[in-house]
Structures are given as structure tokens and as C-alpha cells.
Length: 250
Length: 250
Image (cartoon, rainbow over all chains, first blue to last red; front, side, top):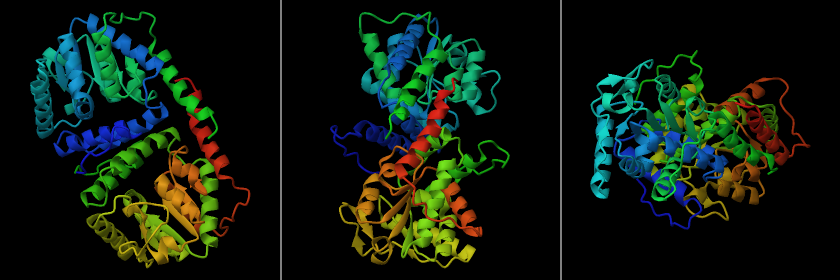
């Protein structure tokens, strides 16, 4: 693996740092083969979004956090790319919400689960986080979903009322919505099936979303549930942000 | 590595097959760490283009082929992703044009060059191709370009008048244009620096481009140079194709 040498002044610093984090995660066995490709797709959409949090993404983030705070049993799920890019921040949010996190990887294998638990346990130790990590020993399944990706924990995903599932696949998102949960996804593609299925879609890069939530939690004026929030309308705003890039001649 | 089991009737068959080809190439040491991320970016743009050759992309392909046919010393360059996705087809085009191919990888290392040569030599043997493979022992440099990516062969890239460089980086594309060459790039992002720098940009997926060129070569009516071709105008057409996807409400 190449050593990470980019200076913070480099215009592509954040992008290069994200790649480096994924390379480390891949070397540690945390990622599926498709993880890098998925990240590249995200990079392309983030490029189209101008690599910053849009106004509509911030509205969705605030509303999502308000729902998590108001939930009876909130949960944040973590997969390989999420763990690599924002594992620490999401665990800090879970700590603030006093809720668990649950591993929910798509291509579930024992070694990958072990690598992820090891990664997150190290973060807990380093940052004094006590939030429980579920998902190592799933004891039930998400209904209407086939294969290993349906496995989950009764005390975690299964019983939650508000669930934040960053970088989620469309089928699982749909199955979670069918369970009656408020499903929050983070997806850079505003036209993906996950983005369109979710209750609240944050069209933004996961580490920016996590940092925005941490900042919101720290303020005195925590966000309130936006009863007028319509997800499809918010998604259209993100689509408009991208479309604006195409309306200027090159 | 997972075995490739997708059926040809699968709606994502071509996309899954491309990923599988890249996984094999990665296992064979042909790719840099960033290759999968680059492929994912391409996937996102191809999704926005509807995963098919647009009218403007076909015009650019025809014009590119006409320039290659009319060239005094044409050349096709091949990097890791290109070799994995369209190595055979590009060598067949070079054979038809009676020109060499040259390896031009960005992160040049001895083992990666060796893996690529091995891959392309196996294709030559299997398909009765005799086109020379240059780039193993570069003897000169592209002016105005720093680092190992500037290395090239006097009898190849350096002396060529028309050069097809699929999936090229912006700096090298610019340096080749400055040498006075007609530079043909294949790039799924119509707004990339390479796309904007090149003489002719084909905004399409490399294996579709290669197959389109092979079909054009086989016909009796081979394309003629389009003297009215304006690259920036053709790029704007591709941008319009993408923009149209954003104009329909979801």
C-alpha cells in the first residue's frame, strides 16, 4: 500500500484521504470486492454535487437527527465502507443518542464481521465510547428479504423504530420500510432505489453527514422534526443541484 | 474471488461481467489500487448515460476511427483497466490498422507492466494477433510531463501522429495535445479535464467503443474524417444526454 503523503492544502486532500482509509480497510479484510467500485460511484456523484453539503442535504440531515433523537429505539447500522469512512463519528453519534450500532454487511462472511468488530472496538477504546456493537451474532431475520443480508439482531435492527442505514442497498431499504420503521439512508445518488425508498434520504457524503450531525448535537438548538418534510421533494432538490452543473456550457 | 455466475439475461449482466474482468485483472496484478475506484466513477457516469452508445458518441467514434485510418503513424495505448475490459478488441483494432499498441500505465511498476504484457501476449496467441506490444522498455519521455507516467517509446507514442488513449489522465492528455498529435480519448465523464483537452472525446464505455469500431471496420463504408467535427460541441451533446435524465421528475 502506498503511504499517505498528500498535504492538507491539496485540492483533492479529502478525496485522497477517503481512498486511503478504504485501502487500509481493504488490507484489514473489512471490505467486499465491490466496495471500491461502490466508492468510485459515490465519488462521481459527489463530484456532480460539488463535493459539499447542499442546503437540501442539510435539511434532510437535521430532520433525520430529530427523528433519531425522538425515537424510542433508534439504531445506526454500519457496513464496511461506512466503518472505514465514518466509523468513529457514527459511534460518537450513537453514544450521544444512547443507542447501539449494528453491523449490517451485504456480503456477510465471518472474517469480514470479525475485522469490522476489531476495527470498531479499537475506536471505542481509543475514544472512550461505550455504545454496544451488535450484529456479530444475529438471531433473527428481516422479513421479505432473502440471503445472509437479512440476518439481524432482535435487540437491534429488528426492534428499532428509527434506523439510520448509510450506503444501504435498495432491497434491504425497502424491506426495512415495510417493517414500518422510519428509515434514514445516506446515498450520493439521488436517483438510486434506496434513495427513493427511504423515509428520509440524505444525499451527501457519509463523513460530512456524520460530522454535520455531531455539530448539530453539540449546539444548544437541536433540530426538531420537520412535519412538512417530503422526501421526494427533498430528493428533487438534490437532482436540481446536479442538473445545474449541466446547464452551464463547459 | 467469487465465481462469475450471472446469467446473460440478468439486467446487470454487462456491468457484473465488467466487474468480474476487473477482479481477475486485480488478482493477476494488472491494476493499481485506484483502478476499482476509477471503474466505479465510470459506472456512475455510464448509468447517467443510460448504459448505451449515444448518437453523439457514435459520431465521435466514427470520426476517431477515420482519423486512425488516415494516420501516418497511429497508435492505441493500453492501461490496466483498458486491458482488462477491452484488451482483445483494442488489439484487434490495432491489427486492422496495422499499428502497434503501447502500455501507458499511470503508476508504472515492473510487476504491473509484466502482468499486462503477459495478459496481452496471451490474447495475441489465442486470437492470432501479430500487432507489436510496446511500452515494456520505454526509451524516451513525453515532454512537459513529470514522473514515470511520462515514459514512452520513440517508435510508439512519441512518434505517433494520431493516438487513441482510452481512460487517460488529464495531464498526460494535455501533454500529448501539446506535442501536436490528434488525441482521441474515451471517457465516460464529459466534463473531465481529459474530455475537454482531447482532440476527439468519445463519451462512452470502452468495450462498447471498441466493439463499435470493430463493426465499423468490418463494413464496406468505412467512416470518413468529419471536417465539421467540433469536440466541445460533441461533448455538450453528451452533457445534454445526462441532463435529460435529471429533467424528468422521479
